[in-house]
Image (cartoon, rainbow over all chains, first blue to last red; front, top):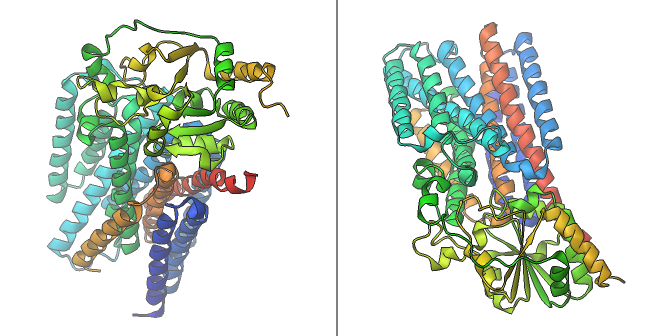
Length: 479
Length: 97
């Protein structure tokens, strides 16, 4: 071992250690921000380590430097600009986009190595070694392509650029996807047999497979898909690690792959969906409308903002249940104004956060944190559920399926078994909603029919603004 | 590195990931997902290797450079966005009376 090899080894080891510490630190609120920076530092360290290794062992051509600088500047610039500009509500789409680009990167590396074998690795031809090389190239391309097209489709669906085409809800899509999968397999074996041109077939069919698998999945299940694709991009990175013979890439890729899987599991649990039904069951609303979505509301009570304000003023304890609708209306700041007034009047205010509130686990926490809601007021579902019977008023803002009592009472409901917030236990429930449209699942919400539930119709932001006005008139929070 | 030892690296890396991430509170899942996502941009190292070893092969240089761009888009964007999210959390204690 010569010096550059030893230095690189030490740097790689250090980078892995720091990355692991970074991920570990991200698991605590206090250390999370530093941990993220630590991970970023570890990443730049690994790049410096690699470049200094090549500088020490051989020359890096001027031409290479130019292309390195071009790629670095363009990629970093666009990444930084997007990261600064994107609104917090669009976080799931943004993660999907970043993720897709990571997959694309792995795909391109494998493609490059496949078309132009890197010099140095091939001097004494070894059948076993070349087989491994071809397998890792194929895996990298296959997973990378699925990650890329799948993430782009997920992003487009979340942004509303793409809807769910009707044919994807029929059985045809399984047939189509099986054809793509089989074609990828054929391309893979053809590639191992030495037919290099079949690599293009592999690229095309695995890209189509990524689209075909993601397109039928409904908006409600999209976070699960993004998390799964996040895991895939790790696997693609690990496969690329085998292609270029880098342990660091394999470790980091494997860590991300494992992380994505755990997160995916957590999300599935929160939504009472199994991964299999998310991936192969199609959109939830499509299957459920026939069974229990057809029920009519019989006992809707609607009330004015004024009544709502009067009830709030008389309350001792208020629980807020925020959902994605709140975020869409950008009303989290207005909500904060309302709760500030209530707190000044000595009313206890708590936010009940369902595990999948927003569009990703933890998304709602981020959105409320943006509006300066104190961290201690955010209560997780298991903590807050026993509190509902002792609560005077519950405000449901843009949440729907996560407060549907059907999940507990109606075993025929597709929601049955999903953990929900027991808001109906509270004395009074106000549901602020634009209209009677169903939630993501497309299922009727029994909560709305209950006698202690009142609907306040209107855009969340407007209703909350009116509420501030009414509370002011009542003298709440004036000091 | 022999193939077998690389497989060991893969196995141990996966176990490490499962162990590290199994204990995260739901609050931090979105930042964690975005942070982990940034780390998956580690393929930038593979892209760098490709460019360095291209030896004047222009198409390969271009592929490597584009790949590097995509990877760094993921890395830089991912870390910045995660930092933005986490900044909101860490601001809390000081703001509260």
